[in-house]
Length: 372
Length: 102
Image (cartoon, rainbow over all chains, first blue to last red; front, side, top):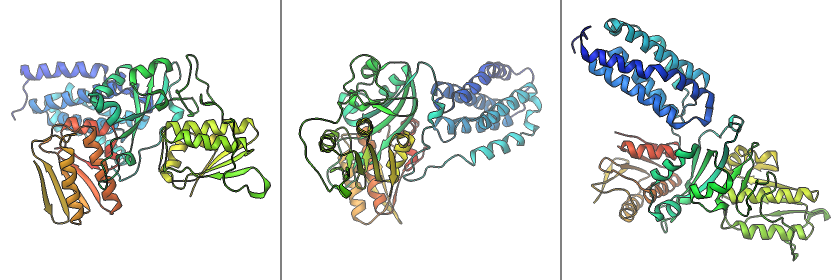
């Protein structure tokens, strides 16, 4: 590649294009930092595309140092947009440093190929060394509720059945996600691996994806956007408690008690031993999944116990492999009912994954949760 | 047409001119089961000739991952197109098993 000359129209056009990209990039990077885990995917994509264009044009013009610098920035931005690296202040400072260096090099492009950009390279290497690599069976970092944006945005926990809700209705995942992104931010997603089954036996007809979604839409409208039944949409309170929308009439959603009817009802049936004459009972869900389909039976069982006078209800999760927002809603509603009667709920023998889920939802601040 | 080749300690499945979708899933699944029955614990799915993976396809990949993990092995997906990679990232699939692009 011959050295770019001052009169080279190609280079001049390229420089002008870069100036445009760089004019607003600092604002975008700072917006990322301010938003924290809830950053707008469009912002990070915009910065990524700017780095990508700067890289491409630099290559064409023979400006190798600028090209390499832009490439490193592109890689860093990719780590951010795939959520392997969070846009903390440390990270955004390095990004801003990188873009500043590009500005400097562009200002003196004829000598840019001899410039020393090792400072940025070292700073970036230090950051990306900490970025998590894909690890089998390790879910990503638990969502940090304390950074949830205040204001009129609401956060929902939505449970999609990707095969039933989306595919069977002839939509594509991309369309659905695009619609969501029009009206809010997808904060985090988590696939339920167990819902896919294994290669033995019959193929699973469902694939469950949990989504944390921040939007200004209120509970009455969210169902129309996501086209998922209300029992699979939970409204997340500021403390992380999840309240399923099923059964709510129009109006504000109660923050503590679930909208399910309280546990007391007709009929009484003692189940299991009642140790030391007290009112403590251990129950074990009969299915390995505490989910919308199995919740009614479990709720009925709990109701009977409370009617029989049980006040300390211990739920043994030893065989439970899966919990969804309906299950979490049931635990909360059971706990709320028991508290009103002077008792409480606790969950024991929760698997590592479920413990992590319950803790990330701050359930342990409401009722006792423990592992093996 | 789904190619199944055996390379040392791993089996490679490569759909040729087929997307990994509901209609092709049964055949891909049976090829995967053949590999498992032959004793392979590591499986590579090569998406070089695949444009699209739908939810049934993703479910199949995850069920393969689940089965392989139980046998102490692993699944890897290679040569995924940009669109497929983007979808996988959106669903955080890369946090469960290795997916890589061109």
